[in-house]
Image (cartoon, rainbow, N blue to C red; front, side, top):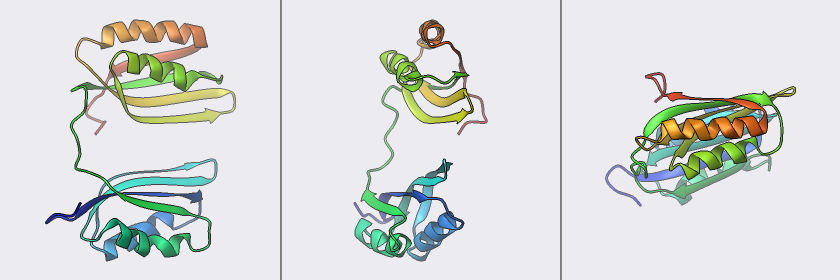
Length: 176
């Protein structure tokens, strides 16, 4: 969808990490006049993963063509698709930070996020790390008013079952 501000596009880039990927993508988008509005980029065990939203005066097809040289060697997978304007949170929730840490075991993410979802919570950001035998999950979640007290109890029960520690607290000004 293109309007006076341009098309809102989602761009993903995935592949083996190398120096300069972020600069290459940002420069190609800047040459098209695309404005990056939201982005997340990370390195996962030697692989690079980026997702960004931009507003561009070009179509998704034109942006994908401009990024095509980045994937010419077959190492990077680049996709571009149209997205709509930002939608308000579905649950009108309040932001909270959820952290989980403990010995690694199968099902931590599944169990914890299921409890959040069943309480009407929406996971808006999630990162995990495995460092030796220690597993760490950090998530930003939006929770409906009145839910955090009961959710804390449910999370404590799941934490006991999993043998991990869970902490849920209101997000401070340090979280955008």
